[in-house]
Image (cartoon, rainbow, N blue to C red):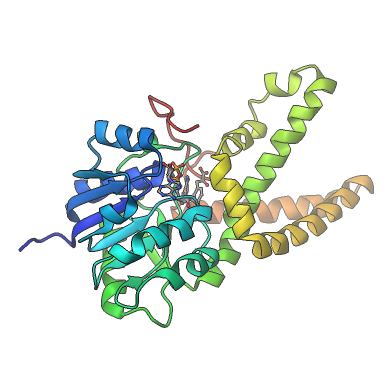
Length: 313
Ligand SMILES: NC(=O)C1=CN([C@@H]2O[C@H](COP(=O)(O)OP(=O)(O)OC[C@H]3O[C@@H](n4cnc5c(N)ncnc54)[C@H](O)[C@@H]3O)[C@@H](O)[C@H]2O)C=CC1
Ligand SMILES: O=C(O)C(=O)Cc1ccc(O)cc1
């Protein structure tokens, strides 16, 4: 017998998030044994060099055999491939979860492939950095950050409690909501800000020709925060936008309307209206800081030091 919450954990995809879970689950005594799989032989070998797990498997199916908790930590566009690969080898009673930044699409991709004798409960730690790969992960990534868990009508309360305890055991604050609600909330709080960052850095890069490199040279202010976000993993973010298309287009439409309003206010010298908006947004920022879920610097999330060995950037 063991005291661990989940005796055997299988992690499919050992990048930033997968490796952070491996480190945090071990550090906090939540698991006894960690089986790791990754599509990339280079990444799998690196995970072994870093001693992130107890066994390493080229085939995801081999990693999940006998696992009590399986977490897919892959780009959301790879969720279906993972479900197909693991489905025949899952242990009856196992909990299958994920960490994808989009939830509705992951449910649609994975759930139909999984047998009825496992519990599929998607999750999303709202914690990360602009870096990727197993060198970039760290055990404290989830401490005092939100992790959103998305149960549905098939979720057994006991299984939900164990998954919530797992995230809480890694230091996260856990909230449950539907996959649909998750996708709308994250579209405005995370996906749209990333899209804006990608766009503004792209626009600035184009303007370099006009400004003779002065945009990049003087990028110490707000623009610098955007460049951090815009350095995020291209595969991951391509998948986020393709898989949360409807919610992102919905909030993007609202954003464009508000931007047009600002354009008019500047054109017509409506300083009072600009001042009102900027006062409201300042109060929102101060409210976020009071909630204690953000770093005091002016970025969208948390800066973290570059990994000593960039892996999949
Ligand atoms: N990077 C971040 O800040 C955050 C990312 N997420 C989500 O976590 C997931 C993983 O993101 P990261 O760890 O940042 O990415 P990453 O790029 O660091 O790691 C992903 C790993 O998955 C592997 N992989 C890809 N397809 C696979 C497949 N079919 N089978 C097995 N392995 C496969 C890749 O080789 C790579 O090692 C994504 O769904 C992302 O949306 C969630 C919260 C924060
Ligand atoms: O690095 C940042 O600022 C982030 O916003 C990290 C992040 C990226 C994707 C997520 O789904 C959650 C968190």
